[in-house]
View 1 (cartoon, rainbow, N blue to C red):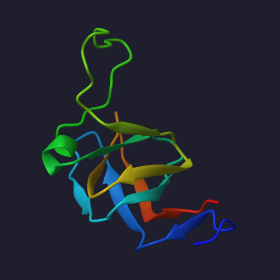
View 2: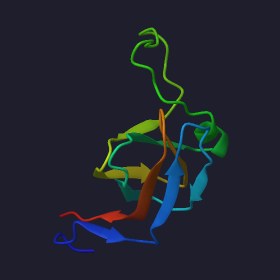
View 3: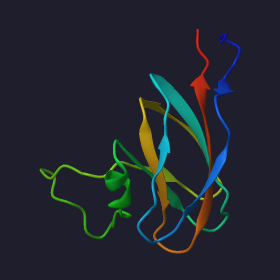
View 4: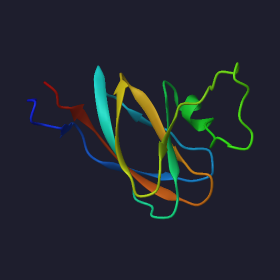
Length: 120
């Protein structure tokens, strides 16, 4: 890949459903450092992308509550990436990863395209 390539897809785009139920995880069997483009297609529902090394880590994800933050000395066991409505974002991961979608209310379709980021 050359420096002129901002993102190079490395697999098919998949659509996942984010809902307020426990997310079902799917496995991204990518090696080394890799990236993905995530597009929250919803124009009305904010979503989160849950990720982790196991499907159980993703299935236990829940939307954080602003009104009830965890104490400062409590580590957050969840790995969540915010996907506000209508946004397209790029994230970088390392090694195989499980992914799933979750929302506070309603449903959001999230398109995931795996690949690699270009660079110098």
